[in-house]
Image (tube, rainbow, N blue to C red):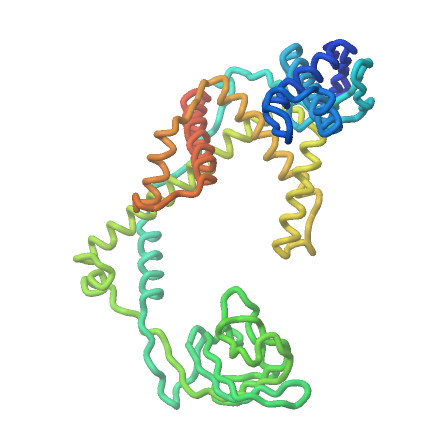
Length: 415
């Protein structure tokens, strides 16, 4: 088989292949030889079925199979001859019908992975201006947050005025547009505008007139599909008229040893130490990600990474489709999507080249150990897809460690 490569601007290539009449006949002969040992036909011993009989029953299928084999053979020979690294599956752009004993030509269009000329890593200077120290104010702020989160609710008296963040229960009637009424109870948090927050992810219910908790709460509109909404009115439009039947307010606990014990620690000092350690780990993790992004950005700016146009366009369309499925399609900024996908693909090909240069590998035992650390129950059967994801995570971690050990890090003043 004769194969030639036609180059186009960018990373597009066309493989031209030519199969001689003799090669096509030989390929057909081999296919029938294999077939007669696999099939069974009444009146014939397996392996001794005459070729004319096989041609009568299976001729079209055999020719289609041979044609596919020759296409794959041409692709494999071109890959080996020209040392091609394909970024996409080949696309048949010209195909002459396969006729045994006649010259057969076909053309395959492919896109190649970019060939990246890697620069010495030590020439990349990265300014590390990170600060991972934890201040006393940050510890106190976290303790105040823990106070608030773990504060118990206490009932309010009838004369108390409602304040933002109070928990209230309302009871009243919901009138559908057609006039049918339903008794309902709602429980939610009062926000700073005295609206009713039923779920932090959903817009609060805005009363039609100012309401301080003592007057009537009147809301007209569509009711959300939330578990906290009575099923009979979910998704319906109507008017709710309700009054306050119960209210509670958080009572902040005292920051002392008893508070620490409620959280499973012995003393307040031990709690402060735990908080400081947790904040330290969180900062270190955040700084690591920021430094990793700096290194990636510097390497991408310093290398010419051409992208296969077909791969880029397909990735953009996949990303837009995912946004549409998620319900965010109304505000899709295609320029931002293009920039984001471009960056992801550039880093994909560049990191692939860096991993190959560094000889970084991740063994099966490392993947298994990584997954078992996250799934402590050894009896759990882990989905096969997790292994590929875990391998990618470990490769990324090893690459990052390799880059940090080889780029030039320069300390800067922390912001």
